[in-house]
Length: 437
Figure: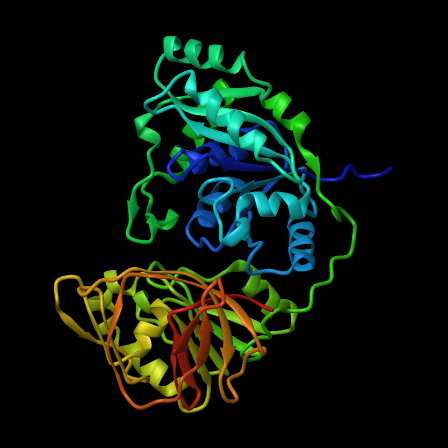
């Protein structure tokens, strides 16, 4: 008997802060409540939303980034993620068409690459019939993919709902749902996005509540009928040469609330290439295993835990011991932790590992945001070219003598000069590597 192919939908939005994440979580949970096997992915370079999606689906949510990843790699990763699932739900990024020049990297770009239909989330805040005009305009701009309907979120009352329905009667975009406003479903944010899923006090209850409002307000049967087939699903072999080879064969990876921004697809790539991964928590004062030949410190929020990290003697000593023989690589927050000191929001200076001549500050804030093309310098152990993303408010106070790690360009090819530092086998930068080019 032939196993049905997995089916997929992309949940996009007219703008950020439209309630896209809550509706996506509710949709995933509602489908699972019906007995469906559901997996999730996130469009773009986000490393916080996927943890919420993973909590709702019960399986790691990977990133699919149409700017940073080749089309064949997106297809392979999507097919691998879909294997064994009934539905794949992809949460978009920002507004549907928002991306680089020509919409590169946008949710619409991903829809064209994957061939999956799009459902548009429109916020009902401060409007009623006009929600239909927004949906109609977004549908008119669709090229190379299909916008199959809209869900209006944040509906305040039955009278409000009636006015929204009236607007949609005048357009060709199907109204697939009206999700009632529920202030209890609001997700808190901080300087890099949503407060992390691991910090949410009642995440399971929030997901269950989201499931109820979506079940009550969305035509789930119709939505499922509109889902498209995911290419290369159940039973098909998916081969994908690792985009970034592992940094060692026995890799120690920091993992806790201070170092939470590791992309699941990179960790899976490293494991598929034969690397053994072990995890340790700097916040619990754990040191990397002595047998590790590489240590990876991903990004996160070391600026919120600087005092705790400075007091983590075993962690600091373990890093210093590892530096005598292992390769150590830090990204963004991990890079800050490898420096000499980190100045927190109150201006307090905290001693870090001291393995790179770097002092950073979260008090003197400045936003750095955008995609990066990276070219490794010297004999740095990376592919010849990398795609990456930078998103931080911390600034560099001082840098000492050390080799530079990457030559960097912006999304439009503008030169950013040389970034990052390298001293022997210890290296890092503020850029989060997404893929090899």
